[in-house]
Length: 98
Image 1 (cartoon, helix red, strand yellow):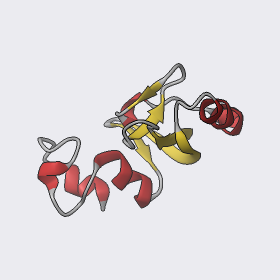
Image 2 (tube, rainbow, N blue to C red; image 1 turned 180 degrees about the vertical axis):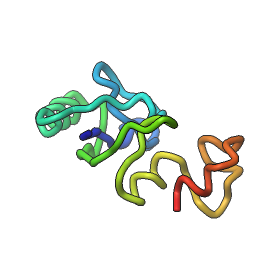
Image 3 (spheres, helix red, strand yellow; image 1 turned 90 degrees about the vertical axis):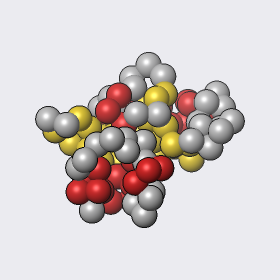
Image 4 (cartoon, rainbow, N blue to C red; image 1 turned 90 degrees about the horizontal axis):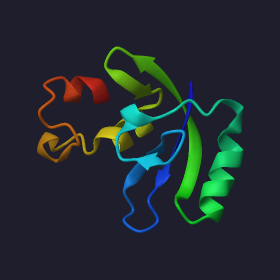
């Protein structure tokens, strides 16, 4: 699975391509297949996202999981303060990141 991520141009928030628009939740990510580069260029050109790039991911029972640790941290938030993560009520949040 290939997913597209970047940062919101106005807020700087990490966002994920849903197939139609952008979402703050990695679980909303859509598989971009071989069209990721074209989508990234189009969305950056429209000023909807900045720094868009394609990452490997996998769909699990818990949702979409980026393959690389960097994107896992970007998806959830800081690893040192679980109260600042996007899912602080998830008891397995720390296990998911590392």
